[in-house]
Image (cartoon, rainbow, N blue to C red):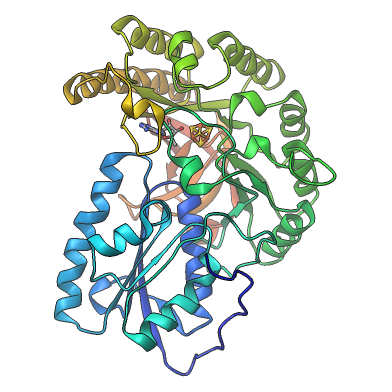
Length: 452
Ligand code: 5AD
Ligand code: SF4
């Protein structure tokens, strides 16, 4: 392990360089990429959209499932061709695959110039300068985050909505999950530091923040004095310019009633909870080491809906966990229908290195897993469609994020409950809270119009 409190490298802004970044995986990775861009800006690298012209290409990787990992190697294969055409171009690999594989990744793809992990983002400028100077590949991966979390510069991709990490890592050990191995143990940022960052965002014109972490519901248990996510939400709720507070992602066991109350009582906190259940079957939940039963989870949802009847709830579910029977799978299906999730990220179980379940007997075939996944997706879609149709005729306040990707003549915003709404509006509405009347609904989005 290298020294951690390295002084920032001298600015070498005289030589302008370009960087292209490709990000796989979750919001945490997207947020990390924004920090990488901030760090690299300090040494003269500006972001460009065409990798063919880039002096530095960065792949920020995800290890959560095998197919995400496979994608890394196919991308790197294609990037090698760019590097062959344009000698001098550098390739850096960061994120969870780099954290996990370190030097073995460096050996496997020797044309990669820099391999860096999830715990040493702040070292990226040094590593780039070193690889540039020595023309040799560098690999640096820390086992843990630095004791004193460095404040890292950031270049955000949106001017309206900002991701703000509040806690890193995860202390659970779900038997399928690689995250604790690549993101380490829970470590919360100080509340004052977070609040100061968000006050700055408010002054800079941001309207929405999403508090990020692998387990935001555990926020603050490791701080002195101890605080919880509810305290942080209340504190951010006092920042006038921030009109919306969201948080992602949590664990049902840590969602205490105070957090739910804070969301209810804080005007700017969105009535939207993403609460991964993973399975609707008790035996599977036990074997996943989730630490709760289906009934416990139902009580969580009940508490939310009793306090906030209009709250939206989404979840993550895995199908085809080793040994999952047809009946146990159907228990998940029935639970989706019973609990009426607004949305669900579904995934076929994927065996991951270091995780106990990867070595268990009773692994399902790809065909079985994908058949279950297809069926589950159709149920999730039907439920979501039914819920979305209830929005028709309602007036909803949305935060307008920009033009719609697929229909650039339309604008796109979100309700507090995280429903995407497309509508015909005006450029001046971008970044504003606007009232729209919902006219139609599909499972993934709503259409609306400006009230007459
Ligand atoms: N296989 C499939 N899905 C997984 N997830 C985590 N690990 C695995 C795995 N090995 C899913 C969980 C988690 C989400 C981020 O990814 O549902 O909540
Ligand atoms: Fe993985 Fe479980 Fe931690 Fe979520 S709570 S990151 S699924 S170990």
